[in-house]
Amino acid sequence: MAENLKACSVCCKSSWNQLQDLCRLAKLSCPSLGISKRNLCDFEVEYLCDYKKIREQEYYLVKWYGYPDSESTWEPRQNLKCVRILKQFHKDLERELLRRHQRSRSKPPRHLDPSLANYLVQKAKQRRALRRWEQELNAKRSHLGRITVENEVDLDGPPRAFVYINEYRVGEGITLNQVAVGCECQDCLWDPSGGCCPGASLHKFAYNDQGQVRLRAGLPIYECNSRCRCGYDCPNRVVQKGIRYDLCIFRTDDGRGWGVRTLEKIRKNSFVMEYVGEIITSEEAERRGQIYDRQGTTYLFDLDYVEDVYTVDAAYYGNISHFVNHSCDPNLQVYNVFIDNLDERLPRIAFFATRTIWAGEELTFDYNMQVDPVDMESTRMDSNFGLAGLPGSPKKRVRIECKCGTESCRKYLF
Image (cartoon, rainbow, N blue to C red; front, side, top):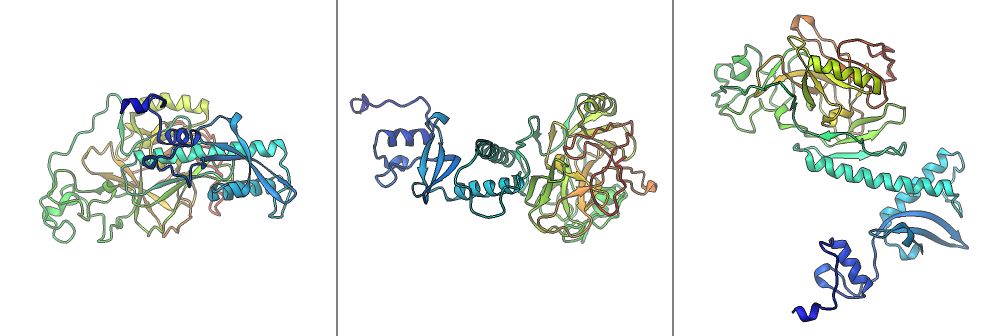
């Protein structure tokens, strides 16, 4: 066996694609790697760099996957089997030409100027970076709903400093005490024993049999916990099941940075997502807020259901709610939720739909949302209006111009 391998040389820990390319370069078929005589001359296109038309023949400058830019080659269209990449290249080209007000027709020019070709390369690199980020987000999520990423507005790529988490990250000096008891219900909705978990906390059952919230904003939600006898399908387990809708992080075209839209219809009063981040003390939030003000960014959410002691900071650690924008006419409403931790100073912040939200519609909530003071709840969001660079701080209210564009716009966030 070893005698047959003397002339063979491969890089240590070569990837599958690298091994395939080695076979093609050596013109060797390898059934185990999927290399046959039919595809022996096939190489993977990473992206297209340039375009030209000579007589009636179209040529593309191809960046080959796994090869440096210096080995990119011009190829006639009939040699390329990358239909998706070709379509995306021409879509990007046409969009940029329209943006530059150079063309209104669908036919591309016969040659691309260097600045246009460079833009298309940067766009291709950005698209690959966003796809990698999308894969990372979906690998880290623990919820059912998938995440897609889209930027058809500019060349901004993934945020440089953002870590996706699925639940609160507890900061220094803070303890989340686990609940000591659970309900003994056989059927929490129709036959609650002792009022189930909400009744034990002297509150109403939050959901109907479709999982839609039926409490008015301001009233707390008490879900069944890890010590309850009921199972995963209990109708009083909604928020803890996580995001169930496919959502898209997208770049807004009106200067509001990133936003989030739903890819599915969401029924009125349905749970959509939690606001997740790092739980810190209000003193630490004050310190960070001063830093964020100088940077022009902040994602501080005061947990002041009963008293202003803790804050959620989603600037670095967060989930998809990190990208949800403000609106003075929002389609999401904030509720305080308690599950395995019953400390009223540390509620979980859940967003529910205020109305039917259609597929393709952007998700928004009011950063300065106020509810009935009789319920001892005042939810305030200190944010930078998505990623638009507007300052804010957890204690000092600053006058920030609103850009939501709704008819009911208050003109200022705070």
